[in-house]
Amino acid sequence: MALDLAFMLQILPDMIAAFWLTIKISLITVVASVIAGILLTAIRMMGGKISRYSIIAFVEFTRGAPPLVHISIIYFLLPEFGIVFNEFWTGVIALSLIGAGYSAEIFRGAIDSIGSSQVDASKAIGLSRIQTFRLVLIPQALRLSLPPLTNELANVIKASSLLSVISVNELTKVANDLIFVHFVVIEVLIELTCLYLIIVGFLMFLSKYMEAKFKY
Amino acid sequence: MDFIFIIDQMPRLLPGLMLTIELSLLGFLIATIIGVPLGILRAYKIPFFLSWVIDFYVFVVRGTPILVQIYAAYFLLPIFGIKISPFWIGIVALSFNSAGYQIEIARAAILSMDDGQYEGAFALGLAKSYTLFFIILPQAVIRMLPPMANEMSNLIKASSVLSVITVFELHKAANAIISDSFKFLEMLFAQAVLYVAFVVAMTQLSIYLEKKIGANLQIKNLSQR
View 1 (cartoon, rainbow over the protein chains, first blue to last red):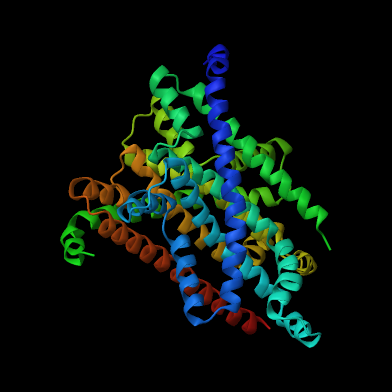
View 2 (view 1 turned 90 degrees about the horizontal axis):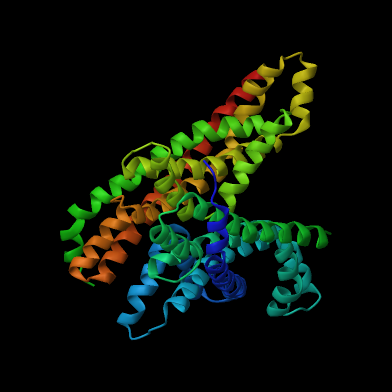
């Protein structure tokens, strides 16, 4: 079995364009889901009963149902209520919601593991609850949650391949189209795999680097 | 929301749920049979080329989306002359995916055992294989259970992606009902509830197993003292 290298070069421009789209989706999603995760954790810790239980319900829902179901919900349901986005933003919103649920759970676990004596100590030196959260808990929690968080973000990036079902022209969709246009399978799949490994490999490298940098 | 419609459509949804259950349980079982021994092997000193092969396999599985792996199984298996139904292609893809994660889980569980366990077994004069099977593994299995439950729920959710290769599982069944009745809200709600119920059932099973195995080990330890 010989690989057709000329063909692999020929489809490279198309694949690279899709690769950038996947990176764009991933970057927006990663930033949005970390910020939303921090906000959700803050509200969960400081808010009243209703907001706490609704956030728990949201987290359970994002963790319990498949990403494909979340994507269909955003894609099919929001237009029913008159909210229409294009496919790109539908996908980004769906992935960000999933990422937010997972990262909220990761932050909560990290904050729980920090220990209540720190909260007591901050109260003793007169910090307000928001100050305690911002100055004491979040810096430590971010460091603790770095390994599971990068794992989860890698999962969200891989979930971006599912956006092909709502016809976002990202990497998997383009590769699939190329397979059906040229009827060449192995070359396209190898190239597709390599491109994904570049993104996820970079993320893993980044996490190792940051972990080493932020060590106590 | 039209609950009567949901109940009416249950005869069409439940076979999908059954298929999802079959796919994820069978895929998980095959992946455990492949993944756990490899993971245990990886935790010990083995020839470098073998550990490279295992590491590369894990890197590819963890670095590519499940959708790509499913497409790869769907397009590549026929090229190599293996013609099987989409259901079995799905099983192959799911167990290929899950085995990679289970290798990591088993390896981490073995490596997390304290050195004192090996030293204690060595001091008692136990053979290496005896140490592995009767000292290390029983304790490692308990540590594997929570991440395994995680992996199981990931696998259940990954099985929804098999809808793209026309396996008629829960998500595909619900989509088929949506496309001839246009009742999005009801069907999305119904399938979300069914998925969450299955995932929660599996998580509870793992918590129960953890308690049960843990309790057994405790009693054994006490009686041995």
